[in-house]
Image 1: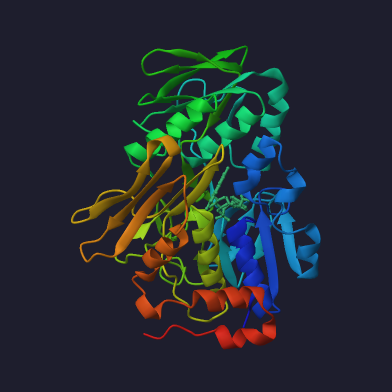
Image 2: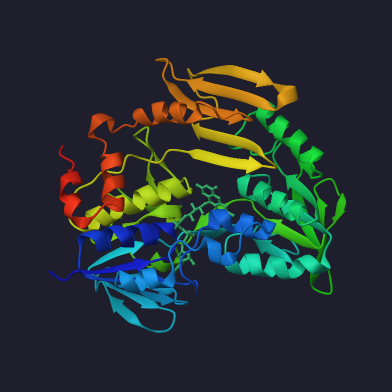
Length: 422
Ligand SMILES: Cc1cc2nc3c(=O)[nH]c(=O)nc-3n(C[C@H](O)[C@H](O)[C@H](O)COP(=O)(O)OP(=O)(O)OC[C@H]3O[C@@H](n4cnc5c(N)ncnc54)[C@H](O)[C@@H]3O)c2cc1C
């Protein structure tokens, strides 16, 4: 059989898949990546911005890892088209590359809203090493920055810039910070905590224009017409999956690339994983777009196993977020918003100590989600309870087995491979 594995994307989804493929197969593995450096952790970019890590510390694997494992990396090259009939991809440097199995792991890019001034110099998304380098280069010439969006990426950047001595304003269009993760009380604790750390937080106001002088940002204008001076604007209002490469093919989209339970797209031999994919939700019956690291890597492992011809079902996307902001830990998991029939239970609330915990209970009494601020004791156990409710029940792929498979030697692997049987 013609078995050549081609992976588009060199982020965690692409690399976790490559690792599983190499453990279990001697076939050719080629990773094509539009970024020109070996894969790294985006989650740690704020730590580099903050100055507590160096760029070299955030690489996922060293350059030698690719060589040692016989994984070819075509870096700085973009896949721009997929031809599923010919089983080839076309790259932006004009190469046509054949594949036996293709994994699309092209991740996502920051959404840049179409407001006036968005292309001014000094306005960045925050997703790549290039964004990071440009921002660091700018730090000497600025003393104020605006973060557009009060989600977890925006707040991490706010913290990092504050550590660098920059005066930061976070502007969130919705009425509270972390609006998709937290309720009003939890968000209020964080807002006060940030204010004490010197961060200005403005909620319930969108930015309608980025003001510029000689092509460079000099401030932002909010919906209420307030001008906030700023030498740097970080746009952190969400991400859009990188799906351009499948344009013109028959691969189905549902915002991202739609995959089945085995991470296969609507076309044979083409799989997708990570921030580019829309996959089954753990509750069953629905699909969700949940662009976080643990979902990306779990999907990648499942995709790789299925690319190899095994039959492994994905347990489903589970929402989870964990962040520490000026030493205040925050974690959420599962469904944190209110749904029909759900009971919400505030277990702990000490406003003066910044501690809050709320759990969501399904009508049958099981925990379906939680949010915790300040004190995370017992939280991993709550998360495990939520995870047990995966729609896969005991047919769920063996998470610990797969972990052993990834970490263990080839010899031990067969033991853990337990193809899903209906
Ligand atoms: C600042 C920041 C902090 C974060 N913190 C957390 C956190 O604390 N916890 C958490 O769970 N998640 C966090 N995330 C999200 C997490 O980093 C992503 O979920 C994860 O990186 C997704 O991995 P991926 O491989 O699917 O995509 P990506 O990491 O986006 O990698 C995709 C790769 O594909 C390349 N590519 C794109 N298009 C093409 C193409 N056409 N051809 C070839 N290559 C292409 C891209 O350049 C990129 O290198 C954070 C993200 C950011 C930006």
